[in-house]
Amino acid sequence: DAKTTQPPSMDCAEGRAANLPCNHSTISGNEYVYWYRQIHSQGPQYIIHGLKNNETNEMASLIITEDRKSSTLILPHATLRDTAVYYCIVRVLGTNAGKSTFGDGTTLTVKP
Amino acid sequence: KAGVTQTPRYLIKTRGQQVTLSCSPISGHRSVSWYQQTPGQGLQFLFEYFSETQRNKGNFPGRFSGRQFSNSRSEMNVSTLELGDSALYLCASSLTGNNYGYTFGSGTRLTVV
Image 1 (cartoon, chains in turn orange, blue):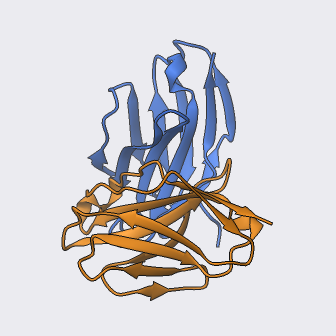
Image 2 (cartoon, chains in turn yellow, red; image 1 turned 120 degrees about the vertical axis):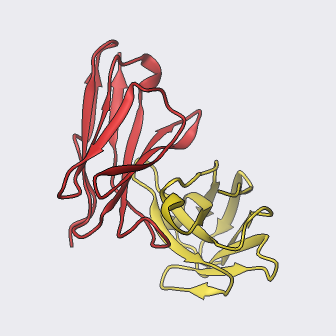
């Protein structure tokens, strides 16, 4: 699986958009980009995933660059409860999909 | 529907002992993956099971093993516990393990003393 690079930490004001970047320059054509977040003492929570088109769900939006070498997770209106560690991972299709490699993630702190 | 259930939530063991952790996936999910999370190493992949077969394995010593039952429930076992095995052990399930999002359990916090 391709390796991802994320900034170690970010701050965001409550109510503002949080934009979390992720670099995955070695991503291959059959790898999806997944985002998870982990709130202290809980298991990671799935947020969103995409292949090459931008995706949006009730939690967030995912913007993937045209060359697929980077992506941005957008939380449109961050709340204090969005404070968590956010992980960007890439996952191949097929039987190797379970072997996900989680990096160190980005610790997002939403401030009032 | 019920989420991924891991038992026990907390466990304290002594060095040299062995431990078995349990994971019940979401109903209908056939893929179960196990992860170890420590402050120093982050979230590391242990192994994945699909339809009772180990499909992938991470870089952990043979003291770490697992299995999956016909109802997709999974157990992992750690023998000859070491202090460094103290960690949060997380289980995640998905329908097939392919491009579906994984759902994680709340984990088992293992402390080795």
